[in-house]
Length: 246
Image 1 (cartoon, rainbow, N blue to C red):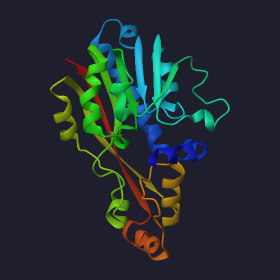
Image 2 (cartoon, rainbow, N blue to C red):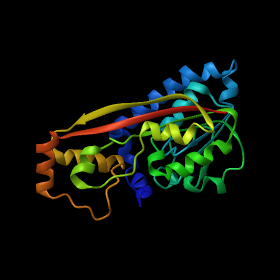
Image 3 (cartoon, rainbow, N blue to C red):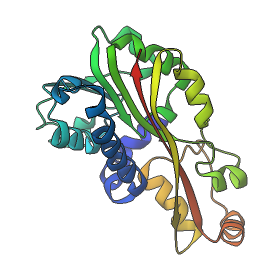
Image 4 (cartoon, rainbow, N blue to C red):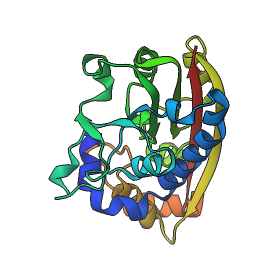
């Protein structure tokens, strides 16, 4: 159900997904900081890159501009060619494979020098996917991703009792430390303010990230309570993780 939200909101995503754009830029900055410390040959680290959850290619474009991977495979569960006649990532010269990352073991057959993803993992069976990713990384390969933490959209969760399952930093450490040397693990809070509670939920809908259940109905009383309790603020908790395969 949630996967179709992004196709429906593809045309409004760029203007609404401000936090996800910040996350993409910050993840690139972390890669620029840590990747050169792992090898004398930076091109080798990005010689064969796999990005999952590429969507329309905003993060993909940054990867290509900053690291010029020799070979790159992008994945998403949706086919954005149905939305755009010329998808934004179509001119990148990369391969695209459409499949559900929860079943990545059935589709991936090679090892990559770097696996990366921006603002996607929270939609997946996180523990299952993270346990499998090391299989598809070569020794000393990099895993770099951003996702959302426990306090993400906590106002909506508290008031509406809806939302995704999020993990905290120590859970990510525990899931990864047996197979990865943790290079970076951090969280940042980003709070957006809106002129009304209705605009809060409109923002969530237009960015496709709300996780609201089908049939969820915004009543006037709920909107009023959101304004009263949270002053029309919406908090994101952004998580950043970099690891090197042992």
